[in-house]
Amino acid sequence: MDSLEGICSEFLKGRILSAEPFGDGHINDTYRVMTEDGDFVCQHVRRAMNVAVLEHNYGLYSEACDKAGWTYPAWLKTHAGKYFYTDQNEERWRMYPLIWGDVQTPPLSRDVLFSCGQGLAKMHKILQTLAASPQAVYPKLHDLERYYEIYENLLCGKDLVEEQRDALIEGKIREGIREFRKLSLDRTKVVHGDAKLANILFQEGKVKAFLDLDTVMQGSLLEDVADCIRSGCIVDGTLDEAAASELVGGYVSEAYGLIDEEEIRLLPQVFRKICFELGLRYYTDAIAKEKVFKEKYPGHLLEKARGYFFLKGATSDFVR
Image 1 (cartoon, rainbow, N blue to C red):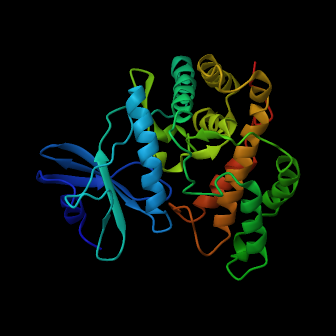
Image 2: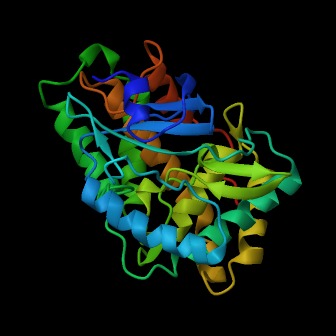
């Protein structure tokens, strides 16, 4: 692989002062690069991601965000006029100027929770104005049947790590799949696709920007909201019902014309589905030899799975 400095020099003219790992991405490797001309983000893009689709979607959402005056990661071009640089090992990289803002972590204040919901609704409104339909970089994102199929195939395949299996979790999976495969959602809207708190930047308590727009696609608005609740309203293994209600209140206050009251009533069930789905994905990775998610330490993925399958307060009705 080319040196990180060499990769960055394909995009930048100014002298590079330093670079360091940045963020907490579960899949892509990301670096903060400090230069004489300011700070930038350099990101390694997985080979499985279709560059043509990424560029197609970028053209759509960048135009919509520009028209709305909404901040987003604005990709740089290489000196050769390309959005991506391919290194000597055929690995692809991209860069964009660092967006300054605050990354919030739970527990959040009531004002920030309300603003978070409002910001997500504003982002959703902008995404409905795209000039054409986005293409899915991850076509099976939030496809519970697909995740369950991968899990079942793993159980009878050669990639299974038998000693990592957990009977209690597998019981939860058998129960949950019967409930959540019956849930029918409107998937005709354009969504962020990964609307977790780590992808939201705040400034003075208000949402300034959403990051990681690679997952923009047609999908369920409710799943976006539920994922935001999952990342922002769980504290010490317990769903904070009041926090979830505040975030939903902010979303509803800005979401006129996007979603109706009957759909909003489904949010608690959709939240449980999102937690189940992520728990299933983490558990599948935990008992597999080949991982999709990064494992920070032995047993990390199994720990994450248990957190979602045994979440306290998950059955509360936070929609008021």
